[in-house]
Amino acid sequence: MTIVDAALVIFAYLFGSISSAIIVCKLMGLPDPRAEGSKNPGATNVLRIGGKKAAAITLLGDMLKGLLPVALARLLTTSETILAATAAAAFLGHLYPVFFHFKGGKGVATMLGVLIPLCWPAGLLTPATWLLVAKTVRISSLSALIATALAPLYVWLFSHSPILAGTTAGMTVLLFWRHRANIRRLIEGTERTTKKGTSDE
Image: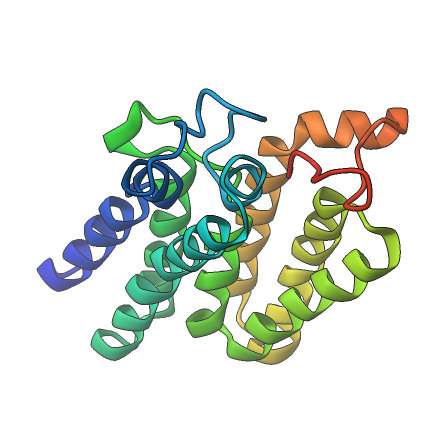
């Protein structure tokens, strides 16, 4: 690993550690998302406590945290290993941010951002899957879980890269772990739908 490679991975983690939800809520005079609603610093909880505009800005910020570092890695290296490490670092930064006591969001938006430069067809198919499932079942968390579960398959089909598909699978496993409370409510049949209120995705 060169100095540039190491710098890319470190930058990705630090950039991913910037919490869009907390910053947006503070700038817009909204409650701390870690103390309101589901207490998750993500776009869904910001929607609940601050409305569509704040949520949209948060969503964009969380996606850019994944997109920009991996896009930069695409420009600076041809190594799939470094590309995968950069993607993983950005995602881990969002989940376990060094600036916020390692307590971050659940990772859906950041994973979607990572996928766009990592494997752009997968970066398009994954949110398309989310939208299709969300329109059908009206449960945000279930839509995210199904879409991200398929993401490693999409990456493999279009990149034929074991390391990129494997890294995506690793992100999916962590995302499922962060959604374990949602999964429990889905099994119990108590997860809220978007008709009755935003689920705690």
